[in-house]
Length: 208
Image (cartoon, helix red, strand yellow):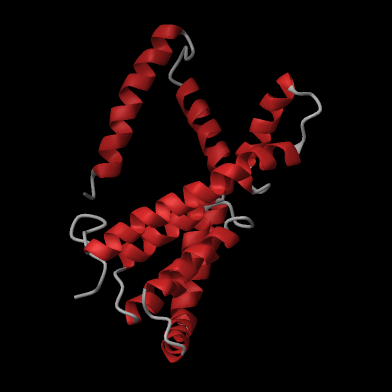
């Protein structure tokens, strides 16, 4: 597993270099690092984001704020009797709403996972099942948030056929898909919850 990144890198690098030199995109060995540098440039925003998120998680772990919030949250849910499947539905709804403001799934999971994974673990739920619930809420509202960069690409393409179209046009046409999509995925997750089937290899619903 430690060699996976290197193996994948070589498997992509070999055919890419062969194609580029044969097609003429690269003419000499000195062109290779230049092209690779352009790839790093495109990734620079994500690298900076990853650095900040890494510092955030490290600070969370160092201060034990995440654990404190998890314990307080679990106690609060238990005190009001919200420890069954309605607690999962509430988590899905929260992810759907936050997704309108934080469109990056990895960023939002980094922020939410630090608190909600230990919180729901205290309630007896597997971290893998919690992430499955997160993915349901995260995916449903992606198509209607203005924070999604791809929605602007969609708008540009739409304007070629409808010059008067705006962002509201895109959102209004995507909105009818959100509710049935959300309900369908919740129904799928409910089937797993009711039947107790594994949501992944060796990952059940409840912590044994």
